[in-house]
Image (tube, rainbow, N blue to C red):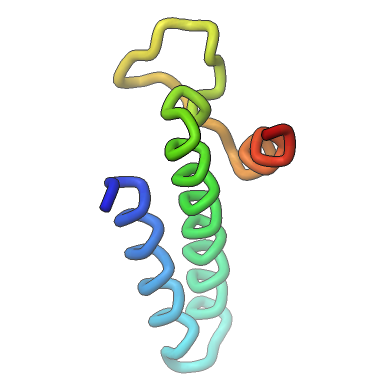
Amino acid sequence: MSDIYANAVDSLQIGIEHFLKEPGYSSRKHAILTLFHAIEMFLKEQLHRTNPILIYRNIDAIITADSMTVGIKEALIRLENL
């Protein structure tokens, strides 16, 4: 299991836990944010499986430890283009 996939699964589990907690604004807000993050990570995992370079925002630049990765919108567009 890749680190990206493990991160996505962990975020999914935490998001579900927040959702199943006591009903309230804060719990629901954290559930939505964490589930959104999980979805983004699952999309990045698919890009990474296709070609690891695809998760980076600027694929023409040298990749370093602090290189920016794509957001959900960019990930969806790249997956659609594949």
